[in-house]
Image (cartoon, rainbow, N blue to C red):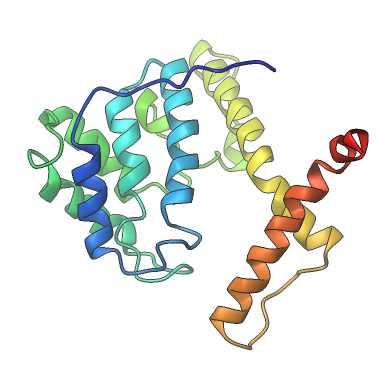
Length: 209
């Protein structure tokens, strides 16, 4: 099996930061936008920031802070602005960013879900995919070719993340949530994602029989 080496960001008080975030976190710690989501964002953003020669510390801090101020799991358009302000309040307490780094972090947190293209390599490491119309409008310039390559890399990452959702929707028929309580819906989704994991490795499991 191919071994991969986890890339580390510069040191800071990660334990203290996580404790502070958890103490004020307002949605389910084990929900859609909790630490499991942050860990996946960190993994991919650190990888992309390394490829693009971005700021690894800012990339890691973004992964932990971008959803730290959510008030619900669904529609919360103000969570980015609140999280950016929260990040400023934590600087010099758990990490020590220079003004330029803090500007990068707060800019990325504030606008991370609006789909706009940013030319900074660090911010590109976690922004969501470019809108198809904007990507089609890219030219053959060196800058646009690099941007297109980055979008291809994002698409590969996103395909891995989206695959389980495709399984529970198409294979298992979970198209919409039912109005029967958040706890019941959450329990059903946990079961479906566990089954989706098994479904995606079914061929490997059958050869082990």
